[in-house]
Length: 288
Picture 1 (cartoon, rainbow, N blue to C red):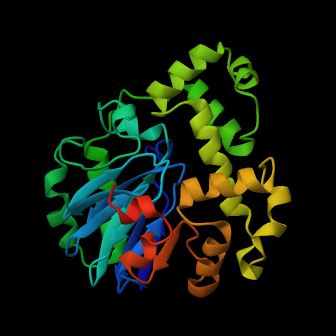
Picture 2 (cartoon, rainbow, N blue to C red; picture 1 turned 90 degrees about the horizontal axis):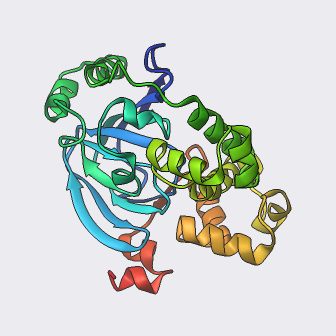
C-alpha cells in the first residue's frame, strides 16, 4: 500500500490539518470508520467507493469522484474497491466553512458528493488521475482547494479557542467554557452550531471518545478494563455504552480487531464481511 501525506501551505493551515494519498489493495473489502473530530474532503480515483451504513442505518451509496464527509458522530461501514486509490484533505471542524457557503449543520453527520458544496470540484477526479506521483497528487489537490478557498473567511477566534479547550479537556463544564470565551451558554451553543455544525456538548462527547482512542498504547495493546480509569468516563457501564454508540462494537471487540490488523490507523477497522460487520447490532441487520 502506497501512503503519503503533507502539511498544508501557510494560507490553508488554519483550515486544513493535512493532505493524504493512498493507493493499493485494501486490507479488507469492508471497513468500519469510527467518528473523528474532523471533516474529510476525499477524491476517489478508483472504482466506486461505497458507503453502506451510517450508525447502523442503511445507505448503500457509491462515490466515484470528490465527496465531503462532514463531522461524523456515528460510525460508518464502507465497501472498498479492489484497488483503493484516493487523495484527500483532513479539515478542521470549523475550517470546512473556508471552502463552502453551505451551512455546517447541513454537512454534519452526512457524506455527500462535493459538486453541490464545492464549486468547480466536478473535474477534480480527472485532474488528479493525470498526476504521475503521490507528491504530485497532493500538490495538485492543494492547488484545487485553493480555487474554492473563500479568501474573506476567517474562523471566529472564540470557536478556535473553544474547540481547542474541548479537545484538551472535554470534561470542562460548558458554562465555564462559555465564560472563558466571553459568552453565555446559549451564545456559545449558537456560535458552535454556526461555526462547527453541532453543539458544544456533542462536540465534547466526540472529543472524549477520540481522545480515548489516541491515548491507547497500541504498541502494547492492553485489556480494555485497564483503560477505563484514565478514559474520562464516569464508570465502566457508561464507558461501554458510549463506546458502542460511537464505534458500533464493544471495547473488547475493537481491541481484538486492533490486535489482528494493527493500529496504524485506529479509527479505521477492517472487517471480514459486511454480514460480520453488522452482526453485533440487530438494528443494522434489519437495515432499519
